[in-house]
Amino acid sequence: MSILYHPAAVRELEKLSREVRARIIQALEELHETGRGDLRHIRRGVWSLRVGDYRVYLKRTDGDVLVGGVDHRKYAYVPERVRALGKRLIEG
Image (cartoon, rainbow, N blue to C red; front, side):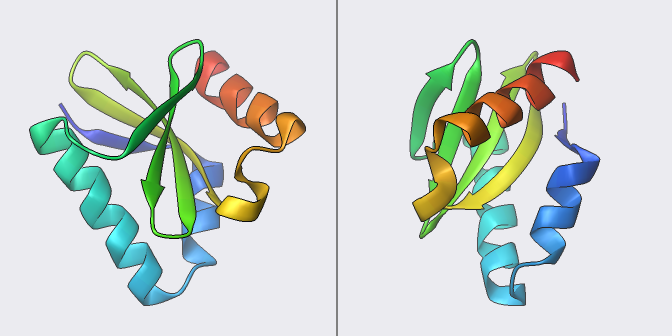
């Protein structure tokens, strides 16, 4: 029962400002603890968590939250990007 980050997601988080990164981590912890958050189903078990202007792509499995990537909302639903992030989460 934990929050796991794909290495690419860690790199994407490190590029963000400290404040945005803190808000995203807080939202992920709340989702993990309570199961609540502003979620949107993307495809095949991949979800998008809305945190301000950012979208966090994740997969929920057996109490774990697997974070695959973080995007600004203007890039969040570009089909090629969604496919790549979904593949990252599905294939591990």
